[in-house]
Image 1 (cartoon, rainbow, N blue to C red):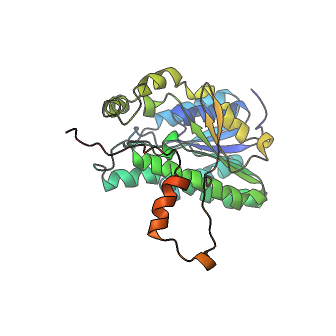
Image 2: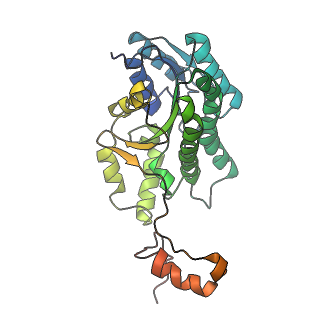
Amino acid sequence: MGDKLKGKNAIVTGAGRGIGKAVAIALAQEGANVVVCDLGGGVDGSGIDKTPADEVVAECQKLGVKAVAQYGDVSSFTDAEAMVRACVDNFGSIEIVANIAGIDKPKMIWNMTEEEWDQVVAVHLKGTFNTTRHAAPLMREQKYGRIINTVSEAFIGGPSHLNYAAAKGGIATLTYGAARELGKAGVTVNAICPRAWTRMTADDKVIEGIKKRIEAGLMPADQLDRMMNELADPSYFAAFVAYLASPDAADINGQVFFVSGTELGHWTQPTIDTKVTRDWKTEGPWTFDEIVKLVPSKLLVDYVNPAPAQTEKK
């Protein structure tokens, strides 16, 4: 047991299993009291089960901290408010929010339903907004807070489950912006981009989907082998979240970190790579003919199309 978070109170969403469970325990190991928030559903969001949250509560309590379960749905604005309120009512205040909850409904863009899009975006993106929105006023008032969100390597735009990828990209943007809005009040907002062995990555349907995408040439041939070799249990990197939640990370704000059992990394924020400038007042609008020449010669030098159209051999 450490004491870096002694006297601090946290909510962790998706804390019944996987990364959320590992994070809840890591916070408890450093002395934080924890509200274990988990609906107990499947990877696709279906079903309800209180057992996972209850079991994690028991594990946290064995570490000598206070812990309670909360079974709400992060995609519900009112349920998220109840999670924050549970922390304040049970422990007296809220200093830490770890937004880990997530579901996955992988489909290609041409066969994804509106419902599949809405459900995944609601849990990931709206869920992260919901808890942050309710915790932010309390953290601003006490002039202290740590919010840690979860993005994914999918946010750079890999094939399949674009609902999940788009939501994660939105969370990255939310992290950057909320950090600027809350930083002056002593509240930091950062995110982790984890690579781990969880229900979401170990699911048979996910693995089968990867195999199909490899066969279709949409993923590298060694994608699955690399996954099997690199994905460790989330407990191997959960201490990094405890670090971001601690006073030691007071000056770290608006950042996204890659975390796995073998690597730690830092994602840079999007920047303009190359540009062509002109004086619009004297040279007027860009013309089509100019653009046709400038794009390949100045903006996209050494560019390679990631998914060129396939043409039939004659």
